Image 1 (cartoon, rainbow, N blue to C red):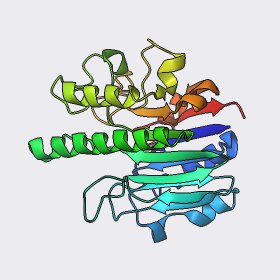
Image 2: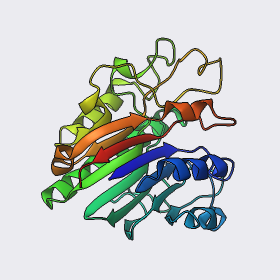
Image 3: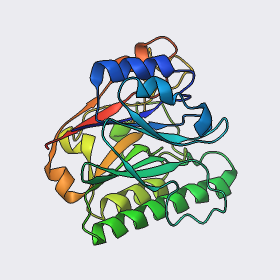
Image 4: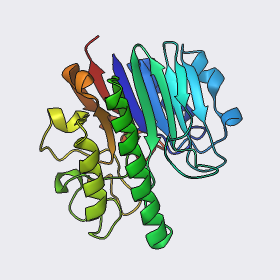
Length: 257
């Protein structure tokens, strides 16, 4: 079983890149973040023609997440349980398919809004950890994948790509990510490639792509039994070289069935 996560940075602007990827790679699930459109604007028909059902949690111009699935899915949440927002941003969708639960997330960046914005990021991470603990207590098989907006270690960004005070690398951010892992989850890419300088994001500015000045901020965290089924993982770096690409690339992992 192949599950792929991709911050697409506007699905309508990059519909052709998504359809090309689906035609070539055929993942069982494609988790999209930052779709930047409302649900009625999502190109559902284009993906349906390729055999994919779409589950969309959209928002006008910002945020937004979607799941494209080749098998039937049951939607179990359209917002992260435990968040205290009256009208939550479109940052989370959770589905059940093929005997596992899949949470697709777009974690707040934390660099806007000053310390209040950063506190929101940490609250969101705490709610995600609580959700993981709840699912572990229920002995469910699950994955939480998406754009975490976290560089967990110094291996996860190129020298000069980010400042030491950036919300993606601040000590409380990394501590919150470790706390999430310490619930018993396995980070798919680092489980298989523990110390390689791998990146999933290259800024559009300052020639970051040409200089390979990137960040690794897109992650997939697996519950214990799923981690035992992990076979391989792949970062599709070639997508960043396409015409008008997203600044992120797809990240896939493969599970024994």
